[in-house]
Image (cartoon, rainbow, N blue to C red):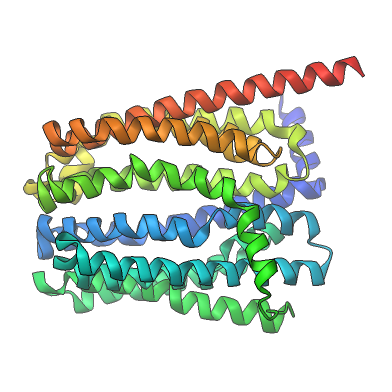
Length: 428
């Protein structure tokens, strides 16, 4: 491309309001997700040495439980509410109503989740043995609800929430080095993460309600129920992957090698999570834009697939270096975990591109729900023998294999629907 052509394109981007907003949101979302993972990454070598692989496993076990509870409390609302606010952002009163209904729905679902968690702790021995770290980890749920990043995303005002998030995470990352001095202090790690969200959440709600003047309206039972019902298909779509993902972690805790195996799986999975969050940044940055301009979807496909392949290959070949650099020798089995799971990045990308950022936006939540349900059942079924016979390696194979089936199936469905829509439009 000639220099003059490049300058002309840059000028067009600068003059295009949508493009400028999209780039700004991508930058802030990137910083937000980098903060969410880079600060914990800084603490890994220190924690690996101080608390050891078994304590890592306990934290991972509690985190797997929180994945289920977080999914229930979210109920897909972060997607449907983002879409609805993005489409009504010029209507101040309507946005306040969407915000209120979403928050009341999330808090109601959180209380139901907490009751179910208490019942599980009382009746299930493994839960009871780890109840302290589980209950402390639960504080993450109200913290995330009070930190409505989806709301800022929908309004495309990510600067404020990014700054708050980075500052709070910096403070509580420093707290890890100051207060975790011996193995028994491991429970402080999930506590500090939760406190980071709670402090940022309180500040964020003050900003939304006082500075911007949005109103948290009294809950109306019928409206809250309708809000939950309207997101049920998206909730099922978000919940079902837990049948093979976090459930594999729970199986390890019960009979697949115990807490130590959980620690090794979590060590390898951490780097995949960082890459996954970066891919999610692109998904979330484009989501409100596609709610208005789905005709630009093709550009996103090319960008996302390029980065997914880049990260997949990069993680596969750098796995030995990463694990040995960040962890002690007792974690070295995580190298094979990271290599297996790195393959799943490409398939996660397909799910984001054609599921979240196409099928949901175009109103095909039920179709996406059905695909996710069936693929997750397959993953759930194969997790039992794979985890039983191959422990944490079996869990990694389960996660990667199911993501491959899911990503390919979602792509085929979206491609079929796209072709059908194009065909109908050509006949008009």
